Image (cartoon, rainbow, N blue to C red):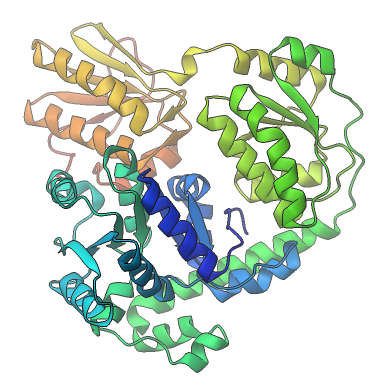
Length: 490
């Protein structure tokens, strides 16, 4: 829906999925997405990546349910986060699973869990904590993680507000032993009695957002206005795209034998109308997608419904887990524009010709240095070349080496080159901010080279501070520097 994957589940099916995952012990992120999430994901690459990779995304918002009728199979029902927590707690008590509530105002998490325990005898509460309000860059992450490590809950409820709570969960998901983490927004306030939920009549007709806006106009009017403007623009764009004359598929057919030689799997995409169609198609290809790049021929298609887009998203996720990619060939322009509007073209390769397809597969089937970060020394300066996508895994790989070389002494500063980089996540942004503080504290300079404007904007939003003017230095073109008097302590 609008570029974000949504699992088509009922509330009871969602609860069962959460309990199953909690019992598995494998860390998972659950997102209750509404129209504002779709807007946040559309404008924020990190938020889009979080929703793309989340283990479970349910439709918390009637607009998603209503508009699913326009784009393919209709979503079964709304699964509101505020209605999810109490049933999850009930099922957790039946399976001896523990809950931990984090966030909300002072004492809110403790009060919310106490009320749940009163109504659900036997509920195990592993702990509660309401940390001071702060940006992600200023939070005491080590202390929060230590609390969770001591408590070892099965289900973590995070009420930092969106998108902060989703980014915080994603930042630490692979480093803690919490099986299920759910961003719950204002749910703890509702459970604690700090705020009143909309009456059932408002909820039934999908106007809970209007109730909340009427009660908190200063905080929510601008947010909901932006959401509605996004919705109007998106629907207008999709309507124009849908009625645009559709050209035939590009006049080229992939060479199956050559694709096999390059170590990829070729398959034909087929129309999908039901969840059974989708499950059958995925079962036949997910195994191959785990082993090698997957090429799908979509010639003959003039449009993709939401179910077909969801299947492509799932295949893209599977291939990326193993360092591969999903490649679409014979893609009509209208579908190419649809994928771009939904931000899905950043996860799927779309070569335009047979030659471009072969070049793409040659790069994918043979490791290239674009996926690695490099640390080198020159001119008494530590040079860090970032990879195409710089996230938690890449940060963990270079952190110790950068610290080791910096502590060896005698360095004028650190130069970070992001000329290859198209994506940074919150962990990477926070680490760059930490490097900036370390360099400034030592009275040195950090140079930033080749950072795209969108990434610089994201770094500032994550707390790096104001980026200084271009700093001249031999051997570098168009540098930006962070100096002690321009870098904040955030």
